[in-house]
Image (cartoon, rainbow, N blue to C red; front, side, top):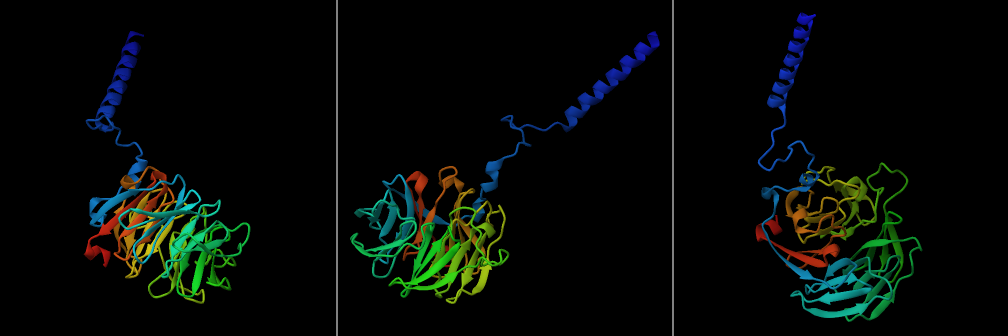
Length: 328
């Protein structure tokens, strides 16, 4: 009996020794801050290595709106911001030119044409104002359910991105309907826009073709004037080169050389791609913006400066790229 007790005791001591040795040799090694290296670091997904950033200078303007939605620039580099049922016009320096009311609605999209006329999307229709705030024309409501998130204009046409319908409509400036971009006949087609939330941008390229964001598919799609798909680009990835989350890029703009500037929500960042959609550099990462900031809108002025509206921070960020990177 005594021998059995001794044997059992030795076995228990041997097992305990094995456990202690195993813990010593394979336990997670903690750093000096006693942080567990195996903890999941969600924030690290959005971090951008320094070598991926463009060389740029940045400045910031504060804006007075609690609920800003859109930003635009004119050919004189004046800045237009919608918010709190108003449109604010600033000089390039940030000095206020004027503010005027847009009825009881805040414009969800803005663009300014070569005549300095302001095209403002008031949820389900468009109003045209002079740069003095005079109402020049009120377009009829597309439909009660429409929600216009973006506008693009050229000499002849107005393009309206209706996120509710997941379609882009083209009208003459006199209000005559011309065309529809997008299809719902086959959801697998790249021209079938998948919009998990109301982020849906349209822009006109220097070659006069139309680019539209298919945010649910993480793509930018290029159309000719007859609404035929010419090309598309975009990679689904959380890496700095790609787009991820429910609906990105949430906004984009096109530079004079045809390159793209994109904004994202979720992982909040602004990036630059060449005219073929190849990643060039990050302009701003999550550290530039408030945590989980949403609704970053983009405008590009005649100097190739990139203006980013951050509604949550009540700020406009202005990024000036080095010449070599602005035209790559």
